[in-house]
Image (cartoon, rainbow, N blue to C red; front, top):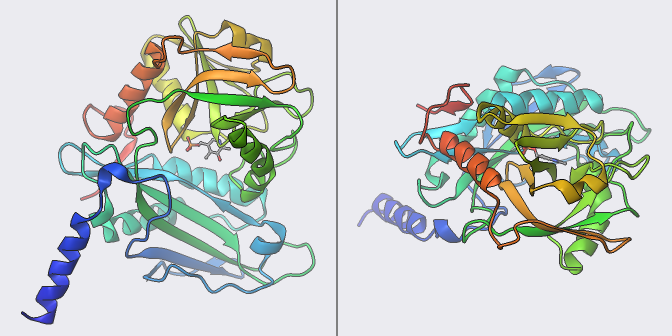
Length: 353
Ligand SMILES: *Cc1c(COP(=O)(O)O)cnc(C)c1O
């Protein structure tokens, strides 16, 4: 048998060994990533790379002063065998908002989308099959790569996109989680960087997050940093509550504008619900019929219980152990649009040819 034949067989064998149904939400090596360099304010061409590593100056601003931002989005294999990328233009806009926040050069939306389309196309064999619940997670990053020792924005930047298959967040259907309200940590200051997707917010949230996990919770709920009166962010996701026919989600300067939340608000309105974006006082947790966290990774993580770490007060949902009907309906509606199982009236999907 020729070498080429062997290589092909190996490839098929390799593909056969990906257990799509058991993928975690984690890093997975794929074939290609896309890079684009900015020198003195000018973006170069998109470049393909097969390396998982980047060569970075040891004085790069991203690793000293946190001058970096990232995005997260997904591509899905549809029932019709077509690959759909969900709302990438919104991710492009948000990355540019993060770029402005940290004085990094903006990336033309068209360049961002081209890079995403290219990384998905080049790694198409890693898009999990329809019906497995898995998807291709796409991670664009923008980092200050130029050397600087004084605290100043870099003069060189790297925009990069990699992708890899990830499993469904909840393997056996929904698994409502416990969350913990913390009052002794903040993830972001009111006039800080909470509204942009930068690593610094995550760095600031690590201690609270790890402690919560050790204490038996899936995630932390941060309160507004100034008064500790209102619900802010649910760890790496937005919070929402369902009360009667209302979908309620915090309006806060330190919350990251989630594209999932944005989409759920549209769907909720279309379902005849009232959508409220406003301050959500902690005490109101008592009045919700359902509560959840939303983001690209899980779409919706239903919340079973919220414990206020300081007072010990407990708020319970999903009393029968099952996800609430409104959360379930919203979740299914969005999933079906993403997988091409129902019409996409807002043009949220980009369909790969
Ligand atoms: C990314 C992120 C979200 C979710 O945003 P999506 O666009 O829905 O994925 C929510 N909160 C924080 C802090 C985030 O970083």
